[in-house]
Image (cartoon, rainbow, N blue to C red; front, side):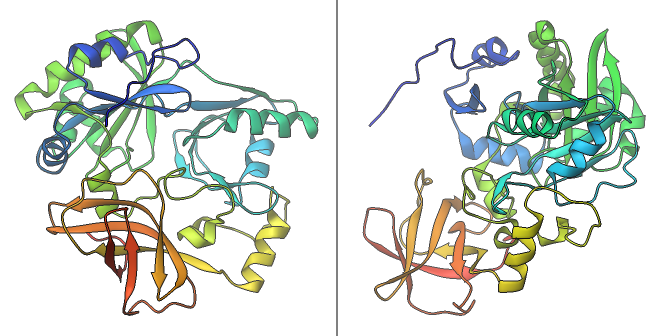
Length: 368
């Protein structure tokens, strides 16, 4: 069964769209109302390039929400349970964003561009509308907008070499989640050591959408000696690494503690923030489920696009949120949720992807 996604004006094209088409993209998904390359013909080859060499990703769909103005930090502090006190200009932090019920609604990286300017590099949800509404309701003097900023990812063990050839050896000293505003051949860029993989790399936030093809081709040219290939974030690698995918692994109704984000929660802060009372109550009552890994039995699977229940006997005790075959482990692996009362060594757990029952053995994250 095959489908097409129509290219309409309600779904935006990336500044790198034409370059990825010229580079042979085979499939798109939609993320933050934007076309996002899904693969270029051979996902496993792109996975190998990520692990062994270097790969470039059009991740412009990772949109930015800018908070700018005298009350920008006040709004930023109110939006997240994580304490951002002491953040330096040029620093980023991973910050859970919750609603008033304590549900996780996004998990961006916040970047501090100035004392009165922050960017939130968001997952797939309309955080621009949420932040803007809260700013207006609280009467804050802050402008909430989407800046002209479109990330291009360079990931893998040779990413340092590619990006150093482009910008200079100073990039090798850039700490994780830190960034610098710079340029390449006159193209304005915010260069951050970040990216949605455990293999290391950078994101080049293009700040002039008209120069997307130019930047894409410069990175491709610089990466050629290192075997760079085009691709997209790898489900194989991200599940092996236990990385959270908001939307795929967590939707409304899941709180940060259930998906192992407790280390990023500062509930004892003196100041208020969205969801504080609800999150404190969740901690007091205890979580009902937790995020785990699963090894899935049966024939090799190519991936899943739906959530599937995990059963112990006739009782549904968990959910597989995404599964894939791991080339490194030679097994089907998955991430998902499991009821808090089910032990990690529970036997006879089963799931079904529509082709019959499969065993589901609990594993800790990450797998690799």
